[in-house]
Image 1 (tube, rainbow, N blue to C red):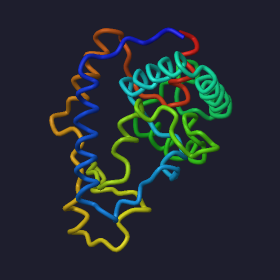
Image 2 (cartoon, rainbow, N blue to C red):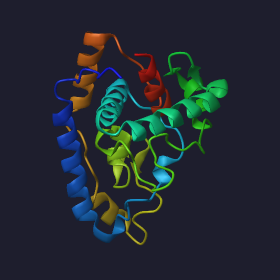
Image 3 (cartoon, helix red, strand yellow):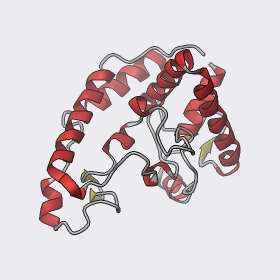
Length: 207
């Protein structure tokens, strides 16, 4: 498998986000129950950007180099997922890009909510590309603010007051470095738009 060229600065972004997660976890203490083998956030498709997709493909290429059998299992799960999802995919099933706009968002809200992530090892409940996981995966669990308010995993923060939850808020990318890197990637490769993990990994087989 060809090894995708990395985006300069992505490692810095990962360090910033992972540091923010570590600080949020420290503040959250026992309220944050995320642990290895907890797979609730690994079920159901979600949108990822092209930087996430590139990082995943890099991770799969790295895994291919030292554990081709594991990489082959991930590739097979991705292909099987694409085959299941293509008939109702709210976008272009040929290139894996999601449609944009309010109507497309409504369609996506009801799409593939029970589909396991192809990177999830069904036997161990562990992510097989953990170091290369998308930003959504890196920030899931602690309180993170979005246009819908402050969201947390439904398994976490039981018994915490609103004030205590706010005090643990995670600010993963305060200077919006990710947007700069996405512009760099688009300028260099033309890649733009959103996709899902299964399509991003299945597309790497065509590279």
